[in-house]
Length: 202
Image 1: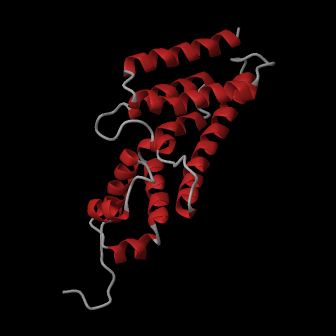
Image 2: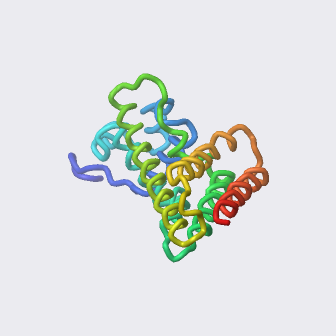
């Protein structure tokens, strides 16, 4: 038996995986502390001792997601790829990940933030996922700028407009997946967007 007062030892990766899947399935607001305790196997004392709060656990779960399934978007920052190919891999890879039936459908970053008037925890949770969305948008924008420099896009391309088109599509995948749109149709839509990129480069 462990000496009195010794912190409970647990598998951090397993806890974060379990919490990530629950937040991904239900969103931040709908996920209760009781559910988190049940799914992670942590007591209230262990949960608060390790993460400080539900919001703290959510932040770590999002980091776990970004390092795992969410890393599919990292390709857009790979300058070894042509800008068009980076965007193609971003879109098609995201569709494949979000329609994978081995985990909840959609994207945790797009779906898990609250939309109602927030309390302190909800506001913090929304900031966590908003920061990731802002980072993705910035990397897409940099890729569009590279596309212009590489001659793939016209010099007068509206950088922010194209960025918003691509980022909006990326975020919208989640809604369509959750509404039952097939991966086949989403891939076709991504190809149509890439055709628009090709047209602008002519």
